[in-house]
Length: 387
Image (cartoon, rainbow, N blue to C red; front, side, top):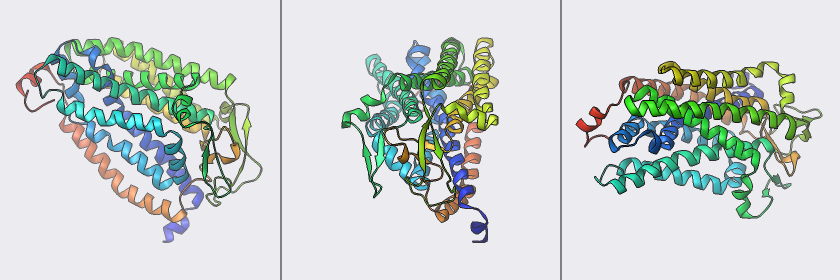
């Protein structure tokens, strides 16, 4: 309890804001290449054996990688209850589509090779492709909507009200900027999946992955740059006005919020956050050259750096906002007004400090054991025990 008293509410909120980012980035770095490989499957594999090679590069790890998604959702639920309520309600239909894709994917993995029938396997291959590409696109679309602000507001008793008809919770998400953000997300994960295939496969699968991944890297960096320009000239930001207490009560109506000229003013206030977009561009460029040069381990690491930079640049640019409201800026959710209690955040932090290292050590051990390339010979010799 002494440690609990020493750690201020403000500090715990910032720590959990950072941990939420770590979990989301961890999901993108691990399950991201799973989705990328799935989306690339019909294009990097022209024969059944080539597609089985691609599938089995992620076959042993994709289930474990999805744990990061569950942890991220759990962290939002426990550490940021208003954010959980607003996001899962406002993005309900999009979340349903993503979860449907996540349900189809394991079925496709398990059933794809159960029958030696070309049409059967082709159908499941395209299922893997769609279930990889659709979530990758929609995650970016969601981020694009959050950056612009989500049309919700709170009543005096903190009941959430959304603007527009129910179908606007999906159709309304597909505005031009959000689609551009979706392109950034999709192309970035295609690049990441290609980098993974470069490391884990060989021959024709590896060669095609390098070619497609190179294009995806250029598209990702170009779309990311265009999104930055769009933010600078076409999208208003948000800012808290007046005096406020960062360790005050978690009430979404606690602060006065107004629209500002640009989100990018954060770089004038906190110049050090420029490291995030620099990492994004540098990682993407180095991934492109790594794919073209045929490098393997370094290319995957550079791809991870690009993803880390892209995602962290969003969080750092918007801080302290987590989900701004476009219809009522006063209702915007920030790090300071939407967290759980001081004690809850502290207990969760203790549990995280105990179990997170165990998860990381187990994950590292799994990847060490499964290190090495997947070949067509491996697949044919173990046809009944692999995907």
